[in-house]
Image (cartoon, rainbow, N blue to C red; front, side, top):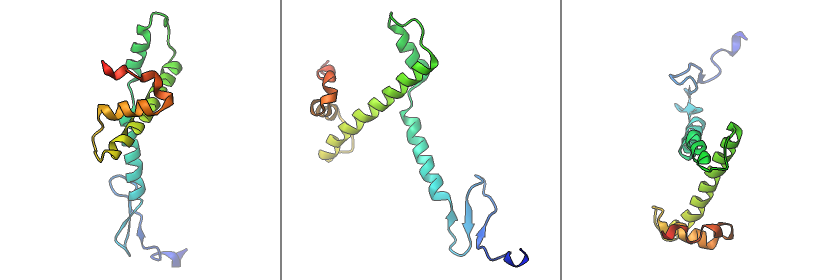
Length: 127
């Protein structure tokens, strides 16, 4: 093991985050690109989260619901998040077709009209 010291060009001293290493040969940080990707994914996950307490409150507004378990609230919340994500992605295809970057009501209307699985939403946005 004595002769192996100094053969690795990577400085394994941790930075403030404790994860990035610097390769002395290239001068580039090792591991930072993966962390940035993970950070972006985590950030997008936070954007899509609905508050569980609010969903539970909305569920309890229904007079037929007397008790909602934490698991049921979680599943309803996750299902709602996935539904909203799916609708937004479908609507965004119409936004890009119109060479725009901002999603508009007409894009959501077009998505609802084009997808058979969203037929139950027809006319909802007319009010």
